Length: 392
Image 1 (cartoon, rainbow, N blue to C red):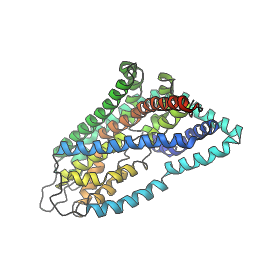
Image 2: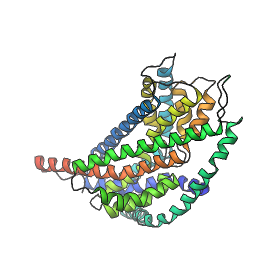
Image 3: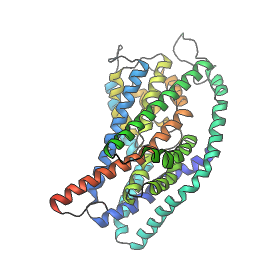
Image 4: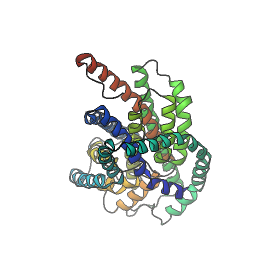
């Protein structure tokens, strides 16, 4: 399973490229795609910011953190320095490079109909192949069960002199039972937070569009894609199935919007991951005996926001956040190794499953919400100026 996911993860930028070029070509043909794409990216960025702030509030409430730090901290300076490093990581990430390549290729493909048609067929084949991915669900369910079955033994080995031993001077090492209980509590908090965030999204959608059926959403879409996401912990692997189900269940969503929002959801729409980042940071800091504050968590929101554009929807993607979060939160040097080890350890398995399920299903709801918003904007624009719609 690990080998399969590593192999597929290397294809994630290729999938982004294949999805992007037909989308941009179609928008180029309609004229002035920049404004539309800026609107979509801006709206998704606001939702990403909301997820970060939600994660901060959940962590603050669950762990009972103070409003202000009770110790000396260099968090503002460290956060600024880490923000620069995060920006460099985003610009050099394969997914960002795939985005730039897709935009550049789309300009050439507009003038090369054969290339455009070939890429359109590739994107269509990716969507149609999604139904076959469902057969992998039992395999990944079995693998995740095997991982969780062996987890207590792994934690027991790590708790006795291993990387998860507590580093604070004179403090007794964490026992395997303590680690297992902490792991289960982190998993429960991440799962509950992701489900609450998603439920709020669905309720907003229902309030705005009364004819939107929650029953149809869960029966025809959610129950068919969530098991694969939960079992594989990979949004990238589930992208074909997600595209297939959104196309089947919500045909009113235009192809351009579906490919852009759902096809790139494992990279652009990782709200579950961002929530998990803060909860895991709070748990790891508490486990090593370092008290965080609401102010310190809020200061690292820009870093988490940016680093979210580095991860391509793969298992264990929170590993990317471990060291930057430790530096930005100014974890003492003697506690930093244990903080990073616990942060990484809390990431795998159940928390990874919950945040993956949130990320991809959130992309479907985001596409529906954007369809409604774009339809309203198009109606207002056509009514006031008679202009041609930007999205057909």
